Image (cartoon, rainbow, N blue to C red; front, side, top):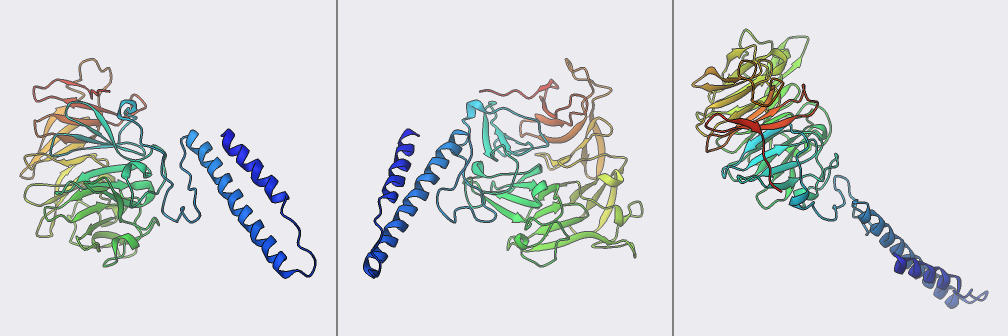
Length: 390
C-alpha cells in the first residue's frame, strides 16, 4: 500500500509539471494535451489498483479494468475458502451423488460432503446475490437456493429461488443459467429458457431422458436439451378456473396448484408435492394426473428419488419420512413416536435423500431450534447430527 501511495504522489507531481503551451503554438498545445491525458490514465489505473488492494483485504471482488462489470456478472472473489475453514450454516435441501457424496443447499452456497465427511465448496461465495455465470461456480453468487438435483452426466441443477433462475453447474465446475432471465412472471412456452421469466423456482428434477423439470409458484415447466422451455402445467385463469395441461384430479383445484417438490420414479413418472393443497399427485409418463396421498405436507426438497427408484417423502406436517413404492405410500420413521436419542425436540423433515449404502439424510426445518440442521440415519437405524471432518 505504501508503494501505491508513493506512485500516486509521483503522478500528481508530474501532472503539475506539465508545461503550458505558448499561445498560438498548436504543436505544443497538442503535446500538452496528450501528456495530460497520459497522466490521467496512469492516475486512474493507480487509483484502481489501490482500491483493488483494499477490496481484496476486505474479502471483496473488484474489477480493475473498464467494462469488467457487465450486467449479470460478478467480480471474482479473490479465492474460494479453504476446505478446512468450511462449516455448515443451515440447510434447505440435500441430494446424493452417485459416489455417495452429499450435496447440501444453504442460504447462498452449495456444499459437498464426501463419504468420509470432508466438506468442499461447490458453488456460492457466501454472499447472497446474482452473478458469475460462465466462470467457476465457487466464485458465483446464489440467492436462497431451495432445491438441487443431479443430472445423469453429473451436472448439478440448482433452483436459485430468490434470483428467479435455475442454475446449472457442469462437472468441470462452471456455472451457467439454465432457466430464467431474472424477472418474475409466467414462463412463455416455446421460448429460449434463458430469455423467459419465471417466478421463484422452488423445485427441480431430472427426467430419465435428461430434460429438466422445474416447479415454481403456479407452473410446472420442462427445459429440453435444446434449451427451450415447455409449459407442462399452469394455473393462470382465475375467471374460468381452467388450467394449462392435463386434467386435474377431482380432489385438487387447478388454481391451487404449486409444484413445491418434484421427483421421478424408476418408471419415469413424476411425483409432485402440492404444498398449498397438502397433497401428492403423480404425472405419469403418458401425461395423466392422479392423486397419490392427501394431508401430506411437502416443502421444496421434500421429495427425492431413492437408489432403488422409489420415492422418498419428507412429510414435515406429520414429522415423518415416507416411501412410495408402486404408487403406495408407507411411513418409514415418525419422529414423534420414535424420537431421536439425545435430541430433545421432534424432528420435522423438510428434505430427504438416500445414499447407495442405505444411509438416509434429512434436513430438519429448524422450527424448534431456530436453525435448519442435517441429520443422518445409518442402515442399522442409528440417528445423529451429520458429522463433518475438517
